[in-house]
Image 1 (cartoon, rainbow, N blue to C red):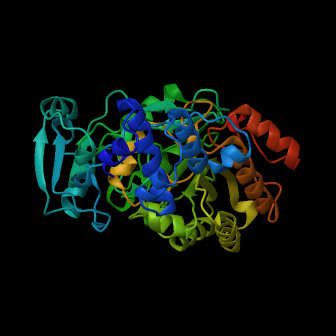
Image 2: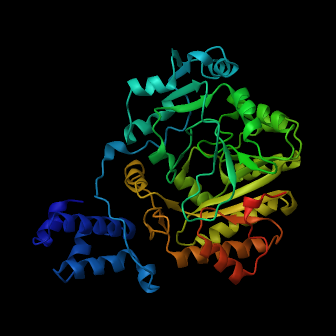
Image 3: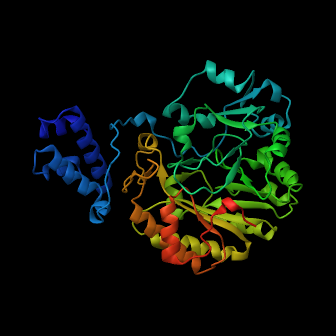
Length: 446
């Protein structure tokens, strides 16, 4: 959108006011699929406050209708078509594989040589020194991250508490920090803003993780991979799951979870487990997967893999996170839940989490540039209790309430928890829905 058209329409507005109006007009034009000129022509006033109020009402109709507070996030509109991501390049075939000196003869390095024989393999002193000498960051670099793999010898960052957002009810989760980066590309992924590595990182020394876990362990704790990477995206290459399951067979008082959007369960199905391993899938309607979760398994493939794992005796988990609002969302999510329970018995499900779409403000311009055709930013997203951009409180409440009612058709015993939500939301839902299975998992689950 050309700024000069807005400047011509409002010649008395300063730079900051023009920036705000530009942002409003762009977002309304994109969402409603109308020309910016039409929006400008329909504005009758030349007073900034009146113009802003009129545009706010067009941009946030739900909030206006329900008298919720509006404090919009209005970053400078800066679009660069060269930063858009090629969603057609689905094959993961890294061009360079860099191996730390201490991991050069590891089993993991050998497996990568076998699976990606055409890649260029290079020994490096350390990932830290490589990044220091090759300071590349930003969207363009992130778009190319799938071209480069690092095989490392992790020394410090083995486990951490779930980085729960400030002010939200905690889940007591622990992260087994095995690897960093993902071969999938989801429009909403926070790693786009968080990641500062030029490639995808795979530690070779998983035995060190196991040694360190002896000091970190707490009885009945929940821990898992999948926070900074997908747990099973390359499990056929790494075979991490085989070592993890074998190790946690000796720690039966701990629940270990693999989180994935893949169907890569071949190694898991070969393992012998002791009933304390949960394999979980992030679920969304296929419509959302097609438009936002690129290179991942389809909904049918995920549920098919879940069924195979359930038949192999594993407990299963599901994460409806993020739940995306769109026209007709109720019908699509209900169909997704119906599909879930057509394949998986309620007694085989350890837990289900629900979390509505939210993200740090800094991620917004990254999504706009990487995925210019995205629709997830078109809805009403405002700074929430933790300053993350979220749907309005009332809308989130209605979404949670609807989903809980659909789950209740199948079971009232499955533990369900809200991910990164404020205390008042939990209390309001428990009171309104009278559910006993809206669980607080910080106390642990069996």
